[in-house]
Length: 243
Image 1 (cartoon, rainbow, N blue to C red):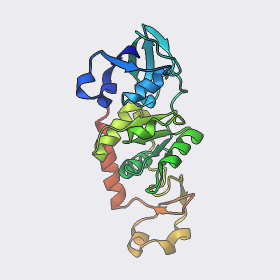
Image 2: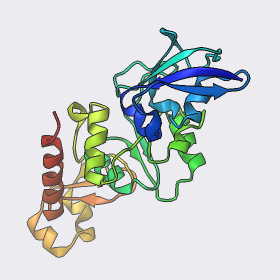
Image 3: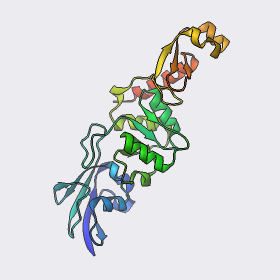
Image 4: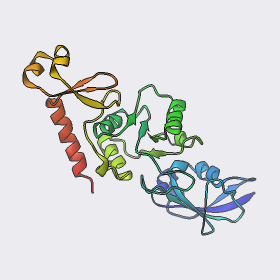
């Protein structure tokens, strides 16, 4: 049996039991174990980690722990951070089935966001890996899959606070371009002549609105009605809360 000391910094403590938060503690292990395996055995997904120091020196996830090692684990700082063992995080997202409202809000802000309410874990992991997407989830076990290079565990449960959390975490306020993506399918929107869609819009809208957009993927039609005003007010409140 061997023993190493661990200390997790800042928000990584969210994943630890109360007795191991904000303190250095002993961890017993057997055989040849990578530091990644031990970090995740303690409950912290590798996607949340930016830097690992062993006895004061930086190592990557493949480092094999030695008896007596002193390990400090630092959190990923956000989108612009340089992450040990990982490439630069992307700003394209894929979300798990429990984050539908967050997915809609991210699309509303213009971010490339994949979401379906029937995605299984294997599909989420594959999309994150093959398309280089940031996986957003409240399932920490999903983030521990080796194939996932970019992921983040959503702490908040309220959809509005989740949106604020993501914007802050990845420094996205300056990248917002609202109302350029379809809320249904994530496709890009482009203008379309009223005469082309006139048979597909309600009579009252035909009389009051002249400017229309449609999704280039699914064909959904959009116009600036009362729903648009409510969405804009919602986004303004969210963005006004950003630093």
